[in-house]
Length: 380
Image (spheres, rainbow, N blue to C red):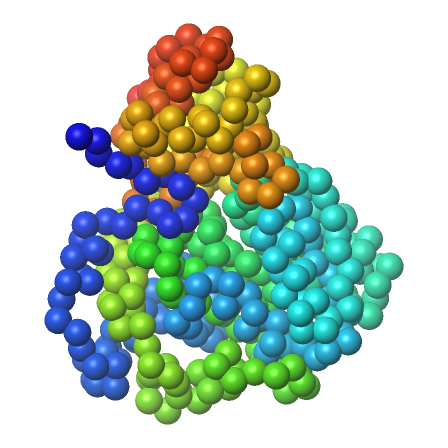
């Protein structure tokens, strides 16, 4: 018998308290009972996003919110800048191209960062750019982009700042209003601790102004419908994903009970411990400015990265993630987001140690676990 531990960067673990909500009797989405649920979700998700502005719930994965951010603010032919340093930066670029944007990519090698200086140079070269798209936590590489530095640069040039925080929201600080973010897209299956299927989209006043001149086609993702229905009835315009809404309501209440600052600090502590363990094993980190929701390391020379991930699951029941696209088989991604605990980090590191040892990598058993334990012990 094996107990399976899910430590992938989405879907992530769902707390039992949240999971059991899905077994409750179905309720109708056009009732006072459900409107109370939606009102609670809106109040709490605004807190997590760091905004007093509009936030809408979409029955889609996070990619739907990314697309909505494009469709509601721009027109075909508009020039946009897309920060591309990984798989999900590429996705923003692909969405913009699908809508007929004139896309200028700000490209860094996977694992690198697009900095405020890079964005400033791009805007100076393309002063007619209408928007800048950035992925907050680039889950494919483990890098965290410095939004607090990029935002003021974008605002100074008058462009819209549109951000993908699908994997980061709830695991790292987010201050949408303070950082000058105009459209903020998030998803449910990462640090927000429920399964896939819900997305959230925050919109600033500047985004609504851009909406007035946007000519891109939209229907299901037309935010005017969402705003009108919310202001008039406190509902979503189309059928809500009722069960997922009930679950995210419960998950957000858990975050509020723990305290948002405490949640962020918990992620930092798990990150410090996991990264200390990886370093103690002699593993090299893949990215700069590493995110607290995951630890991403290079697979040592001579080790089959795909086989390593398979062994961790088959032998020890620990589900990690490998690399995508050009880094498939070259990196290992250990998620510590949402419902992850200190025990999960210890289990992940112990499984990684034993798998690497079985595959011929020379690292002393227990070194990674010991380093992580020391972090936890010193921060009790």
